Image 1 (cartoon, rainbow, N blue to C red):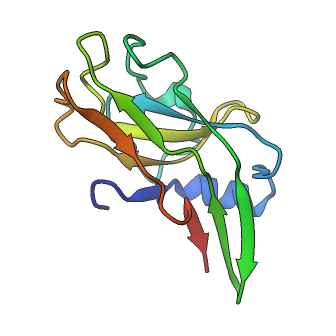
Image 2 (tube, rainbow, N blue to C red):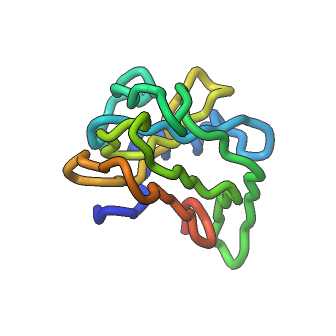
Length: 141
């Protein structure tokens, strides 16, 4: 897993197959956390991780994800969110962001996966923390 790649929890894959997550109707958020998650976490939720302290441009619970679309073409299914994450840094923001955790607020904060933001957690107080999802959040082929 490289910094910036989206990693899906093993248990989230099973939850998707069992229909736990409905990308058309459920609400998803992205929370900044202070450590890198473990892909084999038994039943990952937001509460399994330490969320960065709210302050500055970061609110508790993180950023809302919007406009999930699901598409199947040629045997490949994709999930796309149009809400990229962008937080201008300043002195009141958290400075210990390691990862951005995507979780489902409609399903007891069950986590889907994460993007590693910074391997050191030393984000500083100037510049921008930005996550652009690309053409899709993830693909099942």
